[in-house]
Image (cartoon, rainbow, N blue to C red; front, side):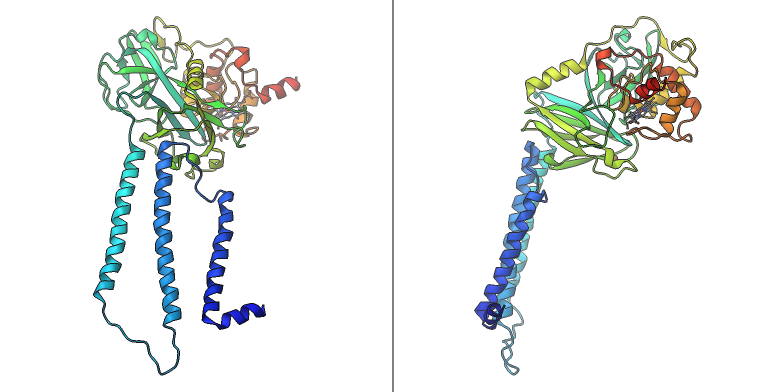
Length: 450
Ligand code: HEC
Ligand SMILES: [Cu+2]
């Protein structure tokens, strides 16, 4: 200790100590880099731009900091009071200094303004007209994510429709291509087919959190399919057990981000950017991913009780692997359906089933069951629930007190009758082939209990 005290007595010694302590502190702080306090490596072109901008700003900041601190220290030591009767020279005005301390910051701010503007343009730029683009419709809702993709249905809109959500009757060049419960897409708007009478197709508009917009005759009609994968079924919490959105590397990707209820945010740290999912509008995030891999992501806008469960994974595959994945997921278009369908009376009712299946079907989508169980109850993050063997009273219990990761539905939100209606509808929906069944713990429990 006394060695330091001796050093502190001389001016040069004190300077050495102060600078030494500062250097040690900075050195200690470098340890934070490995603790992920630093910016993650970017895996997108847009993220690279943001990262570069960050370091440009940081470098300017560090240079300004060092100069200012050095000057402060210099003034403190150079002009400290040496004796009581000796005052330093008093300076009242210095035009050069004033021009400098106004001019230099002005130049820095103007430079930063333009650099940021260029980066902003860079990261908001859409794909070129002739470029191939992968479009993923992202839907956030309390408390899950669904990732939808679309393929051309092979028909066009025959007459324009307005942006009025009450405008629900549409005409297609070939209406037989739409089948019951199918979700179609026009522009960015999702619509669910609920009925068809003659060639009038009745749709529920702006589902999945999209907004109603005007569509001109001749607009291409797409068939939407849920492309959400999961690492393992039945759970949402664990980071290795999340919904997966699959995308290609190298290609421009357009994420259309929507919310069915409250604010959520689509946030992948390695993209170095995040975008809110805002109810009533569809936001666009463009990225071009450069590195293949799985990137753990998380809803980044507090959205209620189970916000922490809204983890998801962005899986970037090389183009070839992605194409194979897409083809398998998209499957083939369902066979055309002749004649009318839909409306309350026409939904087939299994013998002995209770409840109103048409109401059940509407509830299934409006409550967001499809986000976790798939549009046909085929199972996704949650188990397969089409034609379940679990009896209705046990299913009611599941809504009120879920076994594990399912959202809880109290009676004021979904009545017992509503549950019976959903159950009735699910009993009319064909089960997927045995190989694709997502196993149900509840069914196991019920079977074990006899
Ligand atoms: C956040 C995702 C999520 C949502 C939303 C959700 N579920 Fe579930 N559901 C699950 C999971 C996961 C399970 C497996 C058991 C558990 O974790 O509670 C499950 C289990 C079930 C079961 C028991 C099935 C069995 O055989 O084991 C039924 C029935 C069911 N859900 C119906 C529904 C209905 C109907 C809705 C809409 C009102 C709904 N779920 C909404 C995730 C969800
Ligand atoms: Cu959220």
